[in-house]
Image (cartoon, rainbow, N blue to C red; front, top):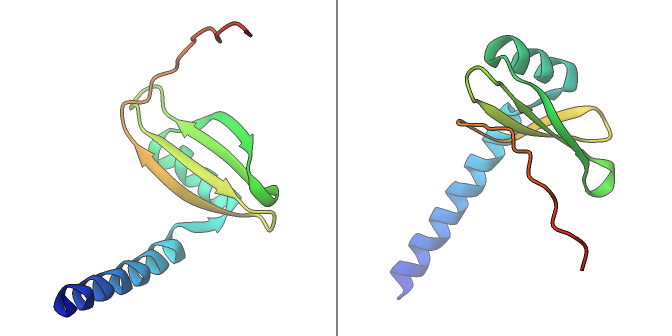
Length: 99
């Protein structure tokens, strides 16, 4: 039991360190992030929303390649990549009627 707990604790510690390293590499001033998404991946802004504490969430995607990226920009102007993927498709579904 103690070995299992020790391994889990060590694993959690490694994950925390890895997350800190990823955070350090995936955040930059907004203009730099947008330029890279546009020039490298051909992505443009497809959606936007307000998150907690004044942060802005944006969805960028490319119609040609299908790549997509979700970013969050903090009030200080730093933009962080949250998640990215492939096979982006625009949807035009009608909202359900109010009940």
